[in-house]
View (cartoon, rainbow, N blue to C red):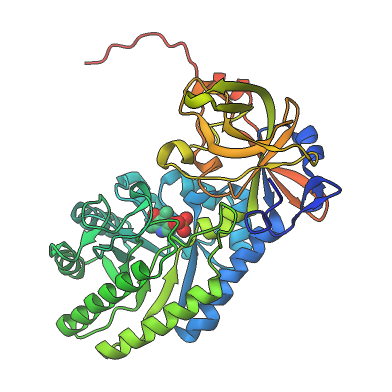
Length: 450
Ligand SMILES: *Cc1c(COP(=O)(O)O)cnc(C)c1O
């Protein structure tokens, strides 16, 4: 239960026994904004954006493409503005995410559009605002994007999402590049090559290059290496066939971050240096010019910057077999603001944020307030035996796939997201109200539908 600097945002510290983030006391934030609360360390967020941008630029030089922030990890209009101001791109995969980017006046020529089942309306909107590129994911989509670009009188820059057949070492639910997945065109089955041919013969598509994203929360390099090798091999085949070279290679995101004691967040510079070396040697081997290299980190930017604050409501001791006991500590949020433990067994750490305790640790389970046994935030953790109602618990590294995956289960109100920096705090996404929830309920006269 000690403060672990490796899992908290850069500008977090324990000061006089209290957690302080961006110069603001956790207890004061909880009092001012309520709990559960997502607290973003704004300066940390901005420095992580720059960390990835500088790492790509310095290691790839003139062949540096774009860093596209994966907005699905967490986005709001304010965050999209931070991304835009830093001069990097953004990756969106629904009309909703695109709407947020556009509301932030995000330059369309730095927006990349993903998704394995984009609607015609989403594609048409993307084309009409002039997005940098659309990443095509299926044969039907080649026809759709081509037809809609033609209707708009445009030639759309596209990438093809390729499945290189890589088993990334992460949970199945967030592993995306082995053969048996819904994403992309597989190389092994010949689908990738067919997609390339079809795209080349589509009059209103300009094939810029290939894309792959092998999964999320990855720590081993082999997956990235194998994927890069396979995609450059395919790029060489393209050159042999079409006598011209693809100009871009987008290697996706997936860089792992620290959640538990002793974990290490990927260092952008180390990752990009290794990638640059690999790309250069593979291009050499195939006698290819080094294409523009783009990447799409989401978790690695947003994840470490945010801490969730909860207030403890109840504690309960439960007898286990063999005479042991487990203490259930229930907080005022749960699976509606953090579904990752329930969805794929993700693990988190916790910190008593409002005081220091000298009590011994006791075998505890941190749970939420939902009507589900599986509403567990931390399955197994030693928490001080004197943790009691009214205490504030901090869960670090909740910036990615926390608020963005939040639900209204049990009609819970999605928590506020606040940004802290240099002793000031401000709301960037307000807490939902009961009025927000009730606004969706309508009483409509029946209409005849035939
Ligand atoms: C989810 C996703 C990302 C971001 O993944 P992280 O693990 O958050 O870095 C990037 N690209 C694509 C296509 C994705 O689906």
